[in-house]
Image (cartoon, rainbow, N blue to C red):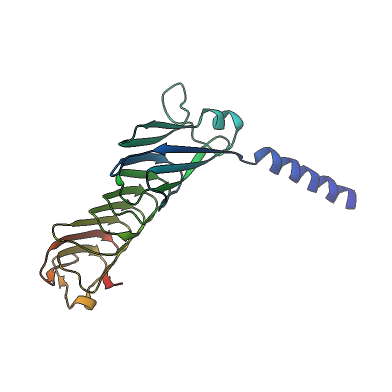
Length: 253
């Protein structure tokens, strides 16, 4: 019995080792001008973007795959100058042109970026991953499928979209003419704004509730779902929130 148990355990260890993921980390740094634009297109992996040093974008890519040959072909593609940094994940493809999906070979890339406060996040997208953004004062435009979006320390125009995930956005201030859009399918939306916010607000959900009690706004029950339309303060900024299956809440931070 003991010998059999030891042999079984050894076999399990060998099997685990054979199926263990292989990993690799890439690090890059780019010098950028004030107000530079950044885009990142990813498939299979989270994206985290935080405020870093002025004039510099620091990128760390954590690559993982089921097989070494897949990892070798899993590429982080960059195209950068001082005004624009473009980053793309490129997965291996089969002879037919499709991605090589499968438990034994598929891979992922998780990104961590440190960026200057004044950059514009022109297009940040991922499939099968979460997006977290903090401390960026410029444009923030982000989208994910099968993942959640979280953004904080916002002061610029914002456009957040997710399918099968929630949206949480926290603003340091909202200015005249500023535009905020958040859309979700199968997910809730939470917006945290300063108490002195001045904005025109529209919100709509098909299956869910809407709560803007902190600012004295009441939703209406429509033919399908609920909607809200009103002003906070003088209505200087524009806020548009829309979800299909989920609640919407606008609160003071």
